[in-house]
Length: 83
Image (cartoon, rainbow, N blue to C red):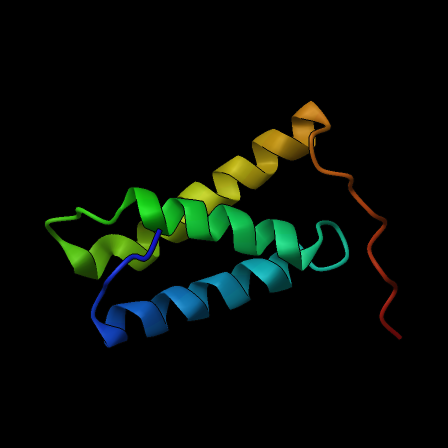
């Protein structure tokens, strides 16, 4: 499914996904984050207020990640120690 949004909106969505990857780095595979973010973006395809799409993609993706971690649906890895 291809979702069409203004390039500015997509740029903000990409920035939000980068933030999520940073927040969950070492805990969740990036592929899982990408998949959940894509699903969230697709669900917002008919949005009447596209400027809020990045906010909701971030919120929905984080919420679903936390739910799946709690349910054991996503294998959680130990965070890497940064020296």
